[in-house]
Length: 300
Image (tube, rainbow, N blue to C red; front, side, top):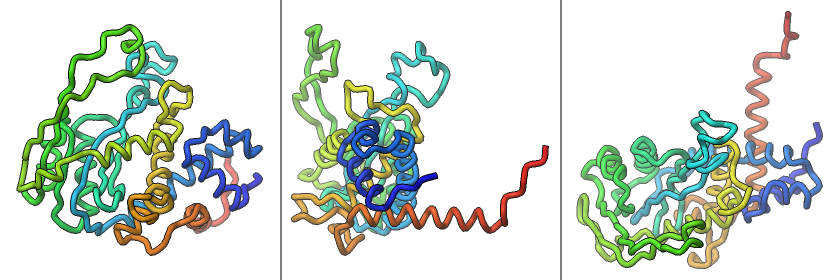
């Protein structure tokens, strides 16, 4: 099997992180679609492993959480009519994110449903990655209440920001397409501790949701670029988070990356360093397989 060179890998990964589709990349770089998809898988696994090990002990102050919608295979309303009807992985999919307001670091993220189980997993993961008491703001999604209490207890300053919406649009065009009601106000509610009302906001995490939609082709609405498998969807998110935290420079951080602002890195990464993570993981997996000696022929 032919292997892509490291510069090719780096270029393809950058194109993926800048919102280009799998098929567009395969045409532009003259490689097969399966080659690009395999690179998404290997890169996603390596990025998740690095994030899981190194994004810990974060000295955070204000954390904001939110969920961004996407879908796998088809939208939930069409799942029963799909050729994959009965497959529990198809339908609506939510990506939960927790971002630090000052450094813009994506501390924790989770891909799956929108129920209390995933809220609990996000909060448990967030608690394991921060080093101090934080002020937390979420939207009014009910599962956050029990999840935050179970994970943090009283050791948090927690508030909810509940958005108030007007009447939904009634035009046929608005009903046919994605057209949310106008937000006419917000209500801040203190849940635990003593959160500073001036910093009760979800603006940064919502802006990151927009960055995710623009940077991951799978999240783009009204296209056929949606994910067909939840595993590949998760790997694409893993790659995006690594790129967002360690490679992408932010104007609001004086051209630093969130990882630099949070003290997790002393330089701006390039895509070659992500390729090096992939190679290191491939080498580790290869050694583990080799530890058992050469593969024996199958006896029938």
